Image: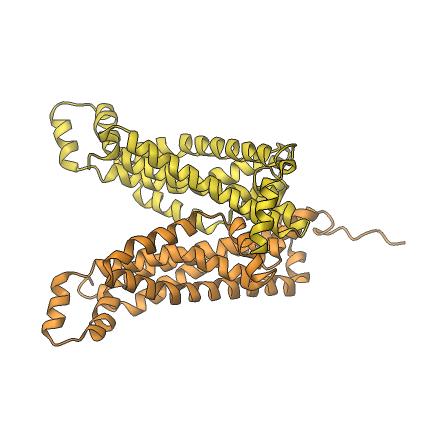
Length: 223
Length: 226
């Protein structure tokens, strides 16, 4: 109980919200980092998945990359990059490590979504004289969209959570509140930092949920 | 005065044979700690996930809450998870194990439940017709048929656990993660690369081991395909 009270006290202290180490600044860093990494990994993974899914090739490749991605610890990638010349670009190592972490699930989800589109619908579209490009953008992509968006949602939530690891390597974001708490042996601060990250992760999940409900029926999969 | 030896350790090279020979004991200890933490947490997670999945299967209303809670647990970041459990466990190996158990639960419950749900109704009815009671039906028909799906979840959970143990370095119980953390602070390239490679090798070895176990315990999936 006392830990909870102390955590609440830490969180509601205005002094902890301002300044470069303050919650507001760390929160903005965290959101910016997540957003940049999400955009970059989408830009890399989604086109590849769409093309492979359209051609119906590389399924094993997509799944294997995804499995291998899970086996590589993000923390190890981060530290490795930090010791290479990439380490001199500020947040560079964090962004690269997180993109490598987020891209495999995005790739797999989008690929599976593309392949699950009813083949008879695709054949009908071809029979109507659609070109490959038209089939991809007017038939397969809209039908695969719910699955692709689900992949983006999973990646976004996981990125919010994993971006905290950046702090272990001296990067910014909410993780810094946790690591600073560890160094000060201040349990309330550590718990407060963890709570903040969990709340942000749940908020991101909520944003996707609300956006999904407001979206037109065909985006949701027409169910 | 003698000049410092000109070897790969003093030159701080990425790949260094001398590092492997001189720090063999440290590496071995780290690998063993890594293995202990991973094995313990996966075993506890299985022991907790199985009853939860069975409960969710038996009582229809329990499935929603069980899946929801385990999924929320999964969205908590590893670093935050270890810190949220800090007031409960203090700086200890139990803290890391508890965090990893909570992580593996989502994957295991989901997959065991999916496996149990995929058992065809006709199969269940046939077994009942043969006079199988509920317990015998569960142990000799339903659980074995759910094995492939459950094993798929177990493999993912184990591989994820191997890579998540590294974050335990923040409380000093991270197995190879401890070497990564120390290597990062001292710019010790050989140590960072060696620990990273060992981590990936451990994950791959664990995955292959579980694949082999699955092959051995589900002989019926191979019957008639040869």
